[in-house]
Image (cartoon, rainbow, N blue to C red; front, side, top):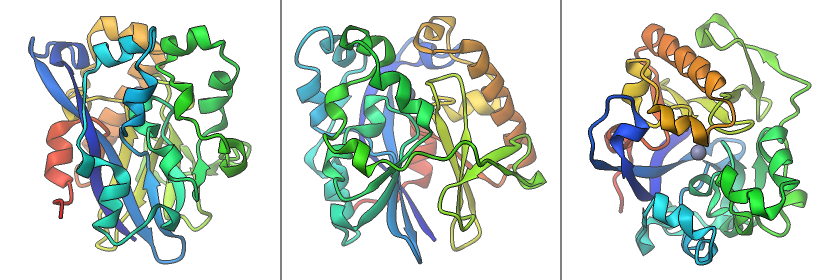
Length: 278
Ligand SMILES: [Zn+2]
């Protein structure tokens, strides 16, 4: 399998919120997505980054607060559909989109990927589905980003059938074999959002990638086991679980220094691993 790390737009936010003890200045948070090209299942994505729909869906209040909290920068060439073209791929070529969680910066291009199956943990979406729209902002959820045929394209992970992970994944003990061939292993990373899913994948060169979504905003958080500012707890459904997950990522990092552990918004990590454009 070939793996490419890409990003579609970025937002800015204060570093000292993202990491305890961070600087009092605004930094870039790229909206990462990954392209997998699998010999049997073809092209697949992990998350989608931003799209112009983010702006459409945050024109009105209270959604406009979302835009103010995280000012978004996005150019035409950043769009997932345009970046796919540089790989000679069209949206119709994308067989699966693995969705880490349903925050806007991870799903804004789902409506462009209307030929794909959407794979996610059921509890990542079941709570959002039944929210009263007035509660959407509390969950950073923009329901207009969900395609109208979402249900018929969804392939929820069967959480009744976890697999026991080998020692190689410790301290993560159970996961989900998302394609049935062991090439993409999903693991739940609780705390940041309900049903947040990270992914392990290995490329043709044998390099292991661990996409941890927003379980940490910065790689430094994992390396130093350093959580965000306390105020960020207000954004998390389960701050205690967030810290527990961060501790697990920290111990995984210590014992697997060769794995590319990738927080979706860590600019340093994304820059280092990203496939050059064009
Ligand atoms: Zn998030």
